[in-house]
Length: 336
Length: 283
Image (cartoon, rainbow over all chains, first blue to last red; front, side, top):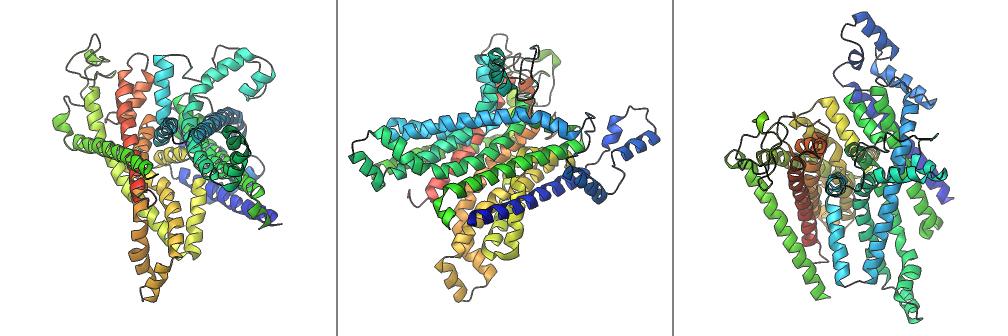
């Protein structure tokens, strides 16, 4: 019952947040000086041409009127038409979304694996030089944001030792048999591992850049929780029963220590997705973020709106899932 | 156990000092840039474009760290770049801190409708990807130093507000606050005289971290060509140019990148070091 109440309350606040995002974006970008329509037409266009096109995109109406028309459209799944690319915004945005999702999920998996391994190793070898080394590496990784790691990776693995691709999502000359935009997933399903290899070689560095700060956070927090759990009575009891230290950490301490980390990973995952905007730009990766920056530079109002709203939906969605998972996993909240 | 603690503190102390020295060095570079820089950072010389740094074959020794594609001196541009980087760090950091911490204090201590409003705005802000938000704002208000500072303040105030709000809430529930109120101090006075001094250490730590973030934001905006004009020397602008000519002239990217890396690392280590100093558990 309490769970249902939490769910309803969270759904309402999420809706309010999304509405707020929509209002802010819509009004902010309409303060932009300069007419996007004028930029679309060739230099010799007459005033009548400009007026006609302005009316076509609805930009001649007042801003609240525009918001109303746009808002009603959105509720029907119509996000308008991109001014520069002249295609429906929804199709454009959904076309790019899989690229960004594949990159983010790959980075998340890397961060969880590396951060988890660091925490477990650090706990197993606590109070040794290894733990000290892990702490220093964590501190470094946390201090520097993904953008700078991306540049360092480009230099080291793109130029100094060119083992990975530093630009794009896939080698342009390849023939792609894909019907969806989830290239990586589809290449595996179709057993085209030559393409999988090419895709991974492009995705690896941007994913690592995104994963480094998150891996450090996971490593730090999980190690702290594990070390606290190791002092509890039931862990000592398991140890007296003769289980090995590694097994005690893995089977007894980990399930209890993982909850705070899980919550944090959820919140941090939204930061990671936010980071894709600049990382995709840095690696010329054809995802949503790269498209967003182009849209801003070209003053493509409908496209900017669509992308920002989609990001906001993803962010609030992830947060919602995290909160509900936490509520479902935490017995105190479940029965409270 | 006591031994381990003093070891942690000593290590933290070294990092604190190294970071402080590097940042002090940058401040001196920024102030005395015209006297220190060997060349004019804007002077172009198309005949000496893309000269390598001094130890590489084919270098012109008067351009210590080489030149970019327009023949501008990399070292001098880095030195002049500290001015914009530090100006952005200090001004936007301080403004963000004042506004964010102020709103956080009000929301956390007064609660009620102020809290509802501030919390709602924090929620909405958290649903925006910050980089996209800043690029959007700069596109709207136009490039320039003022715009960057404004964008950072508008976007990052929530970093302070979130933490300070929570702190003010837990401090506000403590006995000493109640006694101050009983002793006849007004609500606003209590907030300034009792709560603020107690959350000040956290504010200082957040401020230091924010300065590092501001340097990065400026670099990111320069990278997408939305910061200052492309002529003015900024680290981000140099990195952006270096990224495109990475295979022909690596030094255009490497040297500003090292500078930016060390600066961001220093701000963050300084913040972490201060956090340890203020942390009663370690003390």
